[in-house]
Image 1: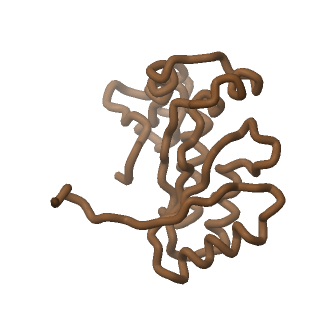
Image 2: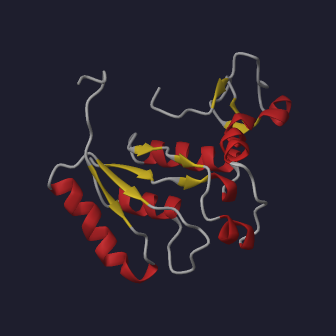
Length: 165
């Protein structure tokens, strides 16, 4: 069946803090064998895991072609405006090789213990709608603060990108 887009293939890695050399090797090996994507799971409350967004930047700096994505980034623990800025920055620094994968959260006891309020999945997924892109400089920021941005935000502002423009 044709779904109107190319299939992509990738790998899934666990960001174990004790295994950085193996994570670097896995990313380089994914690139060597021609995979399209390396995804990194995101459980910020796990003390044995490296931060997913930071690790993606580290791995992207050690590869040339393979794309990266959080699988999936934990919205309840990542303020949407900062997440948008981080991903947009990594995408630019990596030459357009970072994708955005969002998750509504699943392990709510751990999420709450880490300091976030318990949300419904709908509330968690709606959070990125509070982010707008300034038409004057392309920067992301909270929608309710757009007036403070250089050039302000207009009704024609773009919402947070969820795929490549």
